[in-house]
Image (cartoon, rainbow, N blue to C red; front, side, top):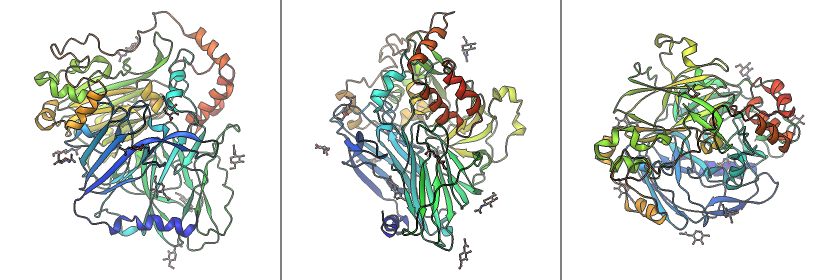
Length: 595
Ligand SMILES: *[C@@H]1O[C@H](CO)[C@@H](O)[C@H](O)[C@H]1NC(C)=O
Ligand SMILES: *[C@@H]1O[C@H](CO)[C@@H](O)[C@H](O)[C@H]1NC(C)=O
Ligand SMILES: *[C@@H]1O[C@H](CO)[C@@H](O)[C@H](O)[C@H]1NC(C)=O
Ligand SMILES: *[C@@H]1O[C@H](CO)[C@@H](O)[C@H](O)[C@H]1NC(C)=O
Ligand SMILES: *[C@@H]1O[C@H](CO)[C@@H](O)[C@H](O)[C@H]1NC(C)=O
Ligand SMILES: *[C@@H]1O[C@H](CO)[C@@H](O)[C@H](O)[C@H]1NC(C)=O
Ligand SMILES: *[C@@H]1O[C@H](CO)[C@@H](O)[C@H](O)[C@H]1NC(C)=O
Ligand SMILES: *[C@@H]1O[C@H](CO)[C@@H](O)[C@H](O)[C@H]1NC(C)=O
Ligand SMILES: *[C@@H]1O[C@H](CO)[C@@H](O)[C@H](O)[C@H]1NC(C)=O
Ligand SMILES: [Cu+2]
């Protein structure tokens, strides 16, 4: 791509020339299968919009209303869109997860998303149906802010995505992943990592300028380490929260996280620079992904430098620009212990407090609307949606104890949370830490997706000031599939006062034969009778051990798989490489309970 041409595109789209009055920004989206080949391996069916992939970036100004008319032209799969990080204040029915805030949109149906945005920053949108977004339905969503505290500090904005790429479709990868043949729950390993959904990406820059770079990890699985050789960056926003500028030489972005930073280019064009995602073993897979910061298209592209260790900026050290103080001690604490285990079908499931998520028969928002005063009773939402009903304006603290040996990026819909504490890897539960209220930071970092380290813990705090139904889940799409989800039903009686479901939303339910009233089991007579609700398989009989199955399976799975999982998921920045790789290649695999 020509340096000048690629530079002009972002310039022309620059928000500076947009009007700042509230406007309605309309999109007509037709989701269809297209063909893509971003890593040059082979063409594969990919979900595009209006015949294109990568899909368009959604852009608006703060205060605008976004209207998206989505037609499902896939023919063979249902779909929906989630706008990751947007609070959907007053419009919980526009949040997107199927069977939570809406019915899945069947092929041939249309659905209108209509919401107003009062928050600036870097977001993204993706399918929230059938773990489908890794097939391509994922793209950036940017809300410009004429009053950004940093607006005078840069010349131009650039948007860049990071992602991972599978050669197979999710609907083909999921059945063997969730099967007796994979009792340890080993996640399929992506075949490639992408920058802006391509490889060999060139970010054309001019010398002596400062850019605001908005980086979004729209991947399914892999957290990414990112650095720009020869340049430090100044972080100014994470997940839509402006931060005090923080200088960093390397950052880590889990899936679903975003970061904006100022990048000042050098004053001469004598060299181009590598932008590297990660270097790691094993040699069989192409983990090294390099893009280039191109000052001069005629100069050669450098070989990326090899680095010895990953030492990214710790996001817990960020401070919000608005200096919002630590919320008061919680009215309500929700403790969620994360574990992985087998159920009676032999497959590996993910649990919060021994509960693995199953979708209800009626979308939870519709249960709120049809339950009258019983809407405050968590039982009506069904045990397997793992419901927590929150009172209006309560201060809520979520304590996640990760009893699992993988890292998990946890995301809360509908809110930013204050990240008030994060325990180191292997530090055990929050209770073990002995940390007390007075030890917490006065001005905690805020974001909407936070990584908990292996066998560590995180503590999140927010005010329940957004009536609606909001999922809390791990954003690794494999763990969404295996059930690592809880449901917060926030101020349900407030939701009843204000919400009316548009006819086109109800129409997709009837098109897909999904009931729109009743409890999680679609019982409209007795909301406490959950018989017939969707349930996970029964637990294994007590005393049963999976050892035999594990040995069997790992004789079938190529050694590379276990090592590769470690490489992508644990080694990257973790110490674990050395002791885990030999362990997996010895044929034992990871113990059940690891991610
Ligand atoms: C969506 O795109 C498909 C494929 O191009 C086309 O056949 C169909 O008519 C389109 N539908 C709408 C509603 O635009
Ligand atoms: C859906 O259609 C796509 C594109 O034709 C095809 O590649 C894919 O296998 C189909 N998937 C399912 C689950 O039927
Ligand atoms: C979008 O929502 C607003 C406010 O709820 C409403 O006035 C408007 O008619 C809606 N527009 C469409 C196209 O549904
Ligand atoms: C990266 O892709 C997005 C669309 O996904 C586009 O808006 C953006 O301009 C691209 N970035 C660059 C630097 O080309
Ligand atoms: C980046 O910052 C580190 C310390 O934070 C410093 O050692 C290094 O020299 C800086 N690099 C550049 C290119 O400014
Ligand atoms: C580039 O040059 C300008 C003025 O010529 C100077 O103000 C600026 O500090 C220089 N930037 C760098 C990164 O050297
Ligand atoms: C990764 O990059 C390093 C140079 O930084 C190179 O030595 C190594 O061979 C590369 N590995 C792969 C798999 O491309
Ligand atoms: C989960 O089950 C285990 C084993 O039965 C039990 O020890 C533990 O207390 C349970 N945890 C919760 C939060 O219920
Ligand atoms: C939602 O809106 C209400 C009032 O309209 C406001 O008090 C509350 O802070 C908002 N919540 C969020 C998360 O934006
Ligand atoms: Cu996870």
